[in-house]
Amino acid sequence: MTPLGDELVLEAGRSERHYWRDLWRYRELLYILAWRDVAVRYKQTVIGVAWALLQPLAQMLVMVVIFSKVAGLPSEGGAPYALMVFAAMLPWQFFSSAISSASMSIAGNANLISKVYFPRLLIPAAAVVTSIVDFLIAFAILAALMLWYGYLPGWRMLTLPLFMVLAMAAVAGPGLLITALNTEYRDFRFVIPFIVQFGLYVSPVGFSSEVIRDRFGDALFLLYSLNPMVGVIDGFRWAILGGSAMLHPASLALSCILSAAFLLLGILYFRRLERRFADMV
Image (tube, rainbow, N blue to C red; front, side):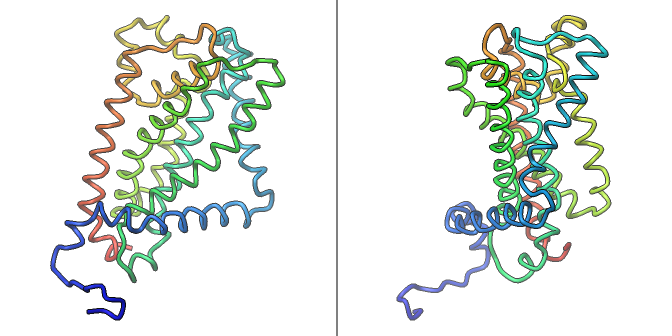
């Protein structure tokens, strides 16, 4: 018996059987890791929180110039083009930030992993929580833009938390896969910026997904919707812009199914490599 009266049990395989229970028991560690990452990100930079404001604004301006002024693509739902782009920047910025942060999270916590036991799943989860802070900062910019254009949200804005949950599911699966791959194969970190940059331009961030549907037809649009972020971005625009902004049920259903499938695959692959992380890092 321990001094506190709790029985200490040493049993082979016990941590594996109680893994998901341990996730809840170690929930305070998740808060600590997330808060540490937030503090490091905003305290040890020259411009601090301003970077989280300038980055999406700069990307929005570039896309407005390229896709609206140069290519002459239409907006969606009758909204100003800048507002349409920024409504898509919210989930995409969250996705790219979470993927990039999670990919290096295991290697960045090597000392912690090699010394104590805890469910390693908490480390990439903390990276996702940190990205939510960036999302909230960017959401303040969206609110300012809507005031600037006099564009008031409708009842659809109440559904935005549901699409945020879908965005978190869409990032969790690929995030766990990439985290595990980057831990096992260190040169994989050079591929991650390319994946994020490529995904930005193949996702309907700088343009409406209706452009793809109108020019290539419903069949190819469904193929395009195999990118889970298509349904997520369309959902955000539908909730934020209101009006005649379109939400395609088939595209949304594909996003939900693929996000769930990637999440399951990511958890399985991460768990398979997890017990070897201490040796890999």
